[in-house]
Length: 126
Image 1 (tube, rainbow, N blue to C red):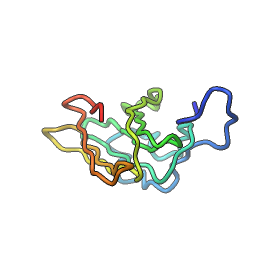
Image 2 (spheres, helix red, strand yellow):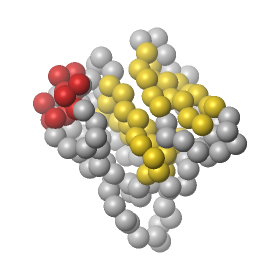
Image 3 (spheres, one colour):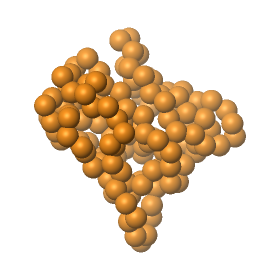
């Protein structure tokens, strides 16, 4: 799936996350975490990735339509499909894992306002 692309538009490239230091969460996720993953899609800016103590890895990106997208893996090597979280943003997302609130994501909107959402409250409708 091309993130933010219409069905009739051609694919340019795949999202590849070589810049992430997978050694930092390889033990928490699984032995396959040290390999490179092609997650598909086209993005604007850099990805944000967080690993939870249970081994789940979540990735957040801004698509070429400026919306926020999310994909996750439980550590088995299998990944969910891209989930469009919506919105219209002008920055790459920043994500953090917190024991009480799950994953929190912060991103700057196209009007310059700061937006935040949490996985425990259900992703925001912006």
